[in-house]
Length: 420
View 1 (cartoon, rainbow, N blue to C red):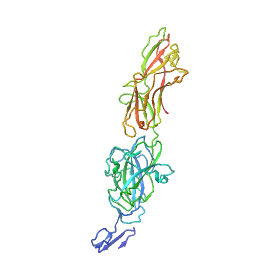
View 2 (cartoon, rainbow, N blue to C red):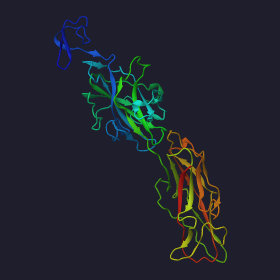
View 3 (cartoon, rainbow, N blue to C red):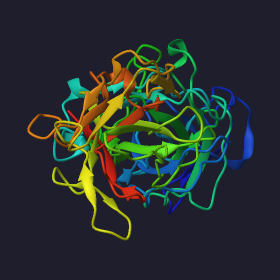
View 4 (cartoon, one colour):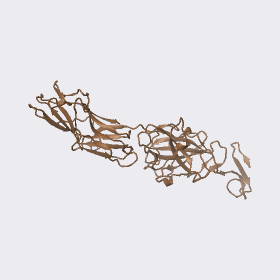
């Protein structure tokens, strides 16, 4: 036998008892590399990169640089982590191979409750499953599909000489959470796996850590020996949004609500208009921010002292008066309806449970509705996160005082959605 300057051992001669160390009992007259097949090979988690979700074998656009913290683009995002495990990075075992199928691995996550992922308490880590708060994505490339190199691969660790690309990790049942290496990993090589994941109710605007561990039930006595890095990401902050939209889902910007024409005489008259309808102008609230409830309020943009004003003139009348001589605006929900659309962040179909339309009300100075009428509200539920709620057919009735000068009168109004 001889030892090279690189520390690799080679032997030749009689091999009937396997003494040449190459997993063979054949004789050899030429030097053969001594091989140690993957028992107790030191393994470290050494590289990662996060990518946008892509319904393909290869990941999407990177969300961050190698080993850098990524921020998910939105609440409920699916995304990809390409994570690397280096075998014998210190090269203490030469000619060593972790054979195919020898690794029995699981992925875990934890909220970053310490200054670093390495300092997170061991009790805070939990397995990534098909229904955990950080879950394996419901859609995407098939579990165990082979992956290959991409131009945006994580930067190779300094103690590794090349990557060995392994497979997609996206089990569809909790009985198949354990994954393995489908290619052997030699000393100094780094195996790469793609974890296809989804935010399934993680806390918003919060940092999380990910790690790969050995499944000690499937492989007793095995372990990941060290972690030189952890994949880390921050969830999106979420939002609570309101808009007018049409049946196709397109935004209707700053819509005008036209009241019926009225003939003014010696007594007050009532004119009506639909603030929202069931087709071209629906009020929509989308919530990915709060599970504590919210409310939608209609108010005059210029405040409690605002008035209907005649275009090109100085004439005006009140929207929040106490009687017909002053003028007042009321909101009617007699034919109104609340609908839910889409799926919640947990994947269930959105429901209107806990969502209420308003009650018939009048804007009235000196009261709680002087400049605010609630059109729709939510009592709050985690099951509403990610859902869109539509309010249709809200009717406005304006009482116009007698003897108003003919013309076009305008009153700018604002819809506001506020978390409770």
